Image 1 (tube, rainbow, N blue to C red):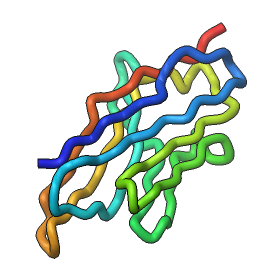
Image 2: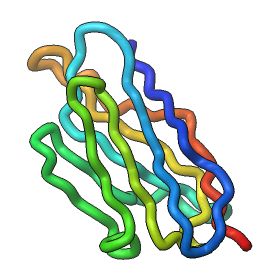
Image 3: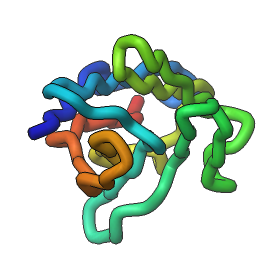
Image 4: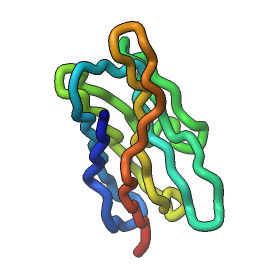
Length: 120
């Protein structure tokens, strides 16, 4: 089994910054794509950003230029640096990992979510 644990959420004023972290733990696994998704109240979960094991990145248009995704493969950790935060960024942020065991895909794993609230 693989577990994802997120940290770094909280309350921040508009224009402020937060850094989210997500670490995967378990045995005998590797991770292809890692990503962040978010879900605001009354809305569907949406993609924020993804990063491959070769560090190719993809961002939602709404966060381009403000958010940066990165990862440390040795630590099985993905980060999301969020700058110039807006009230519309308020949501629960979920970490996602596409997990492999050798050449066998184990599937998508999700973290428990961390709340980000942008408010004055």
